Each structure stands twice: as C-alpha cells, then as structure tokens.
Image (tube, rainbow, N blue to C red; front, side):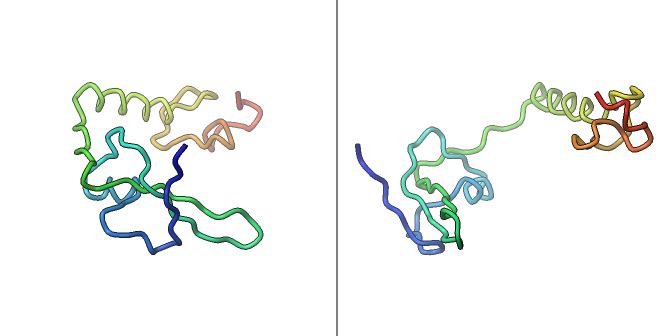
Length: 109
C-alpha cells in the first residue's frame, strides 16, 4: 500500500489542483487517482482534508446534452412543487418545513 504525500494548507506544489479548482478551469479528474492531499489544521477537531489531482491528467468537463438539461429542469420543478397544496411556488420548498410558506405546518408530509 502506497501512501500519498500530505501538504500543509496553501503549500501544494504547482501542477496539482482540487476538484473545485479543476472545475473552474473547465476540467474534471477523469478517473485518475488522488495525487496528494492538503490538510488544514483546526482547533480541537481533526484537520480539514482536500484531495489534489494532477492538472496534466485532467480531462475536459463533459458538455450538457439536451437530455441532461431536461432531467435537471424536471428535478428542479419537482423541488418547487409543494406537497401540501400541490402548487408550483416558484421557489425551492425548504426541507426543514416540508411545505410552502402559505400552507399550515400540519400538512407537512
């Protein structure tokens, strides 16, 4: 079993990036293994860990197809539909409430 290198926060070498940094460049890891990790110390808790990937092995982000756009629109529409009154409220129904703001709380499913 090989271990990966661990770097302190903000001291990673050039050529490595987190998933968010790759995404900002229009890239994705593309199935490559984790190359290294960053550790950010915290008080009284375990450190935050960020995994790093090699930029030269990253692949371009897959483009959104019309079918994926349609599936995303359908999923977002379902999140706007209130289970209490059945109306599309135009905003995402909070999961903490379970119903829209105008429905009484006992209608929450």
